[in-house]
Structure formats: C-alpha cells, structure tokens
Image 1 (cartoon, rainbow, N blue to C red):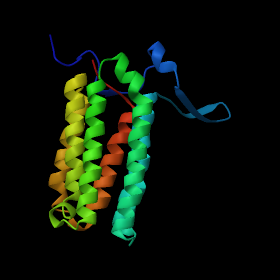
Image 2 (image 1 turned 45 degrees about the horizontal axis):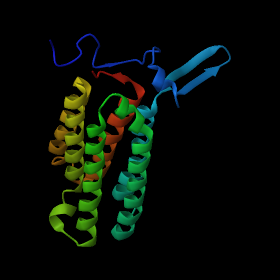
Image 3 (image 1 turned 45 degrees about the vertical axis):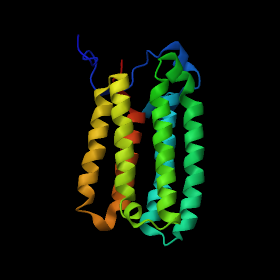
Image 4 (image 1 turned 90 degrees about the vertical axis):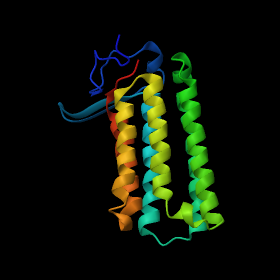
Length: 203
C-alpha cells in the first residue's frame, strides 16, 4: 500500500463533494457578468486560514523591503499581527484537525510561528547580527519544517513539495541579496494562496 493517496493528483481544482462538517463556515465566491460566470470557487476553514496568512505576510515583507520604518516599531506591529494570525488560525482550523486527528500538525505550526516571532524580536531588539542577516532564511526554514511535518502527517505530496520549494528559496536568496524580503514574501504568499485556491492531496 502506498504511503500517499495516489488515486488523486497532488493538486487539482476543488470538488463539490465536501465532507458534511466542511460545510460549516464554507465560503462560496462567484463573480459573473450577466449570465457569464467569470470565477467561482469554494473556501473551507483551512483555506481561510491559508488566505489569512497570505494577506498578513504581504504588508510585513513589503514594508521590510521598501518602507524605511524603524525596525523596533516594525517588530512590535508585526509581532502583534503574527500573534493575532496564530490565534485566528487556531480558531479556524481546530475543529477540522480534531475530526481528522491532525492536532499535532496544528500545534507544530503554532510552535514554529511563535519561535519565529521570538527569534525575530530577539534579533531586532537585541541587535543580534546573525539573526538580522538571516531573517528571510529563518522564516523560509521554519515554513519548510512546517510543510514537511504537514506532508508527513497528512500524507500529502503537495505539502512535501511546498517544503522543498521553501528550502530552494533559501538557496535562491544568496543570489538576490538586495531583494531578500520581497522574494521571501512573494514565495510564501504564492504558496499559501495556491494551496487555498486548489484542493491538495491528503489521507
């Protein structure tokens, strides 16, 4: 028996045969002009958590790349937003992971995100050069660990691929030293929104 569910592709358009529990809080978004449908998709609680993080990351990395804001102020604002994001992620996904017995995957992400916030704040407030010079690598690395844990726990090829992409992103940063924050943010946001937009494989 294969470790992964080979009966479905790693990534596909969302199907309409949702689990009855997923219907709670389900978003259905449809854009149309007259009788012509331009766009239509469904978003579950997990999709909403992914989109939430994608939206939160955009101002964080754009500000770090382009706006000359005091780093201490940035750290304070982004730490508050990150903790808010963690809380909303837990609220959105707890029932989903409990039903599928994946609670440890959620706990893993919470711990990784909190570790990232703490290390980032230590680097900024205590002026730790080794952390400041590797902030982007730190977040890509933590995200990669989270995706790998999710991929193994949920038997998802897509999540393992996302972890690999984040590790490759660390390598790419060495060639884009002046655009590290923009590159990191774009990569992380793209992966999050891609996962929210499509259905990915899991056991």
